[in-house]
Image 1: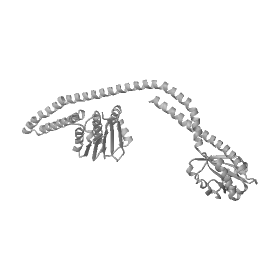
Image 2 (image 1 turned 180 degrees about the vertical axis):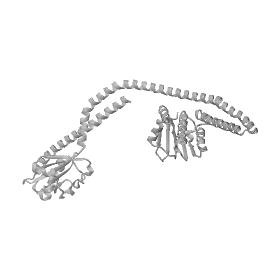
Image 3 (image 1 turned 135 degrees about the vertical axis):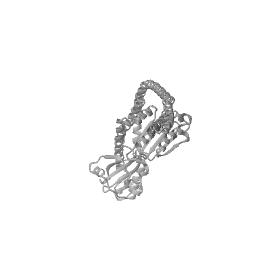
Image 4 (image 1 turned 30 degrees about the horizontal axis):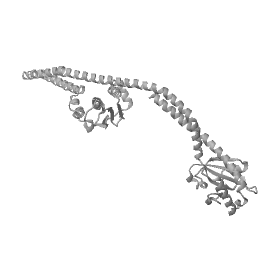
Length: 424
């Protein structure tokens, strides 16, 4: 990826940098060429087409000038010609509607009457005197001062298509492109074999990590099932047997009138039974049988049942696409369990909602939302420092599995836990 990004960055720098470097050069070149052209054509008009009658709007003088302009100046490049008086009146234009109109000349144009020379720049088509040139698109306009036979100065102006700038730029780029592209090609020829071998090593490493992760998850599952089986067949059975055996003794003590002894025995029986229920709940959390036998929805329903017993309103929504099961279901279940455990222990919530969807064929999404008291970043850090690292550990597992885990919360606004994991 680094090699690829480096190559793309180099090409982008060359192309973009070359464009921005050449663009002002070509514009200056076009302006210089246009300044020379307006001076040549201005001398042609002054010598062969311009008469004193133009100053007074004489029809014959204007027609003679127009014949010269149409035959010698206007072409596919020059699209408009204007002759201005010093006071801003258009004395002549190949667009008859402009003749006789008055517009204010700029400071640069007025300076040409005093200093001579020529000036060229991009035409501002928003000006009212340029309204007839707007359909032509981007233009260069150039001015030069010329004189009528009686010595009166007028301003000669032409409008040239900006396509000449593009043509100059294309010519320069064609000249520079071969060495630039050859250099990039040599660079890529050196990079491609190295990038290929690097990518192959990365793919092998990625497959190895996936294999190790799958082995770790499988080993974790086997260990959970072993612990659950040992607890169920050992401690749970023993405690249930003790509670069952103490019941007749408590009854006998009650018949003998030993109320204190009977009360102590029944309290011990109640504690043993409570412990057995707690262990069985723990067994379900360690190795939920419904996750494999009846699917994710039943397992999540089992998790919510403990909250319902505490008086918390619960909702569970599992899309049809997410009920088919996937390798990501254990991680979804674990994330839901951790989120619901936090709801039970810390949130003081009145309701909680669990949504499981399959927005894409290869992704499972879990959203757990509660209306509890919420928490800020400082409180989460305090819990982590106190040893409550369930979400932190879960984030590590999710990252290893190629998923994302997001926790959004604020004091008084509840908490939302969102998980997305691959559903392969």
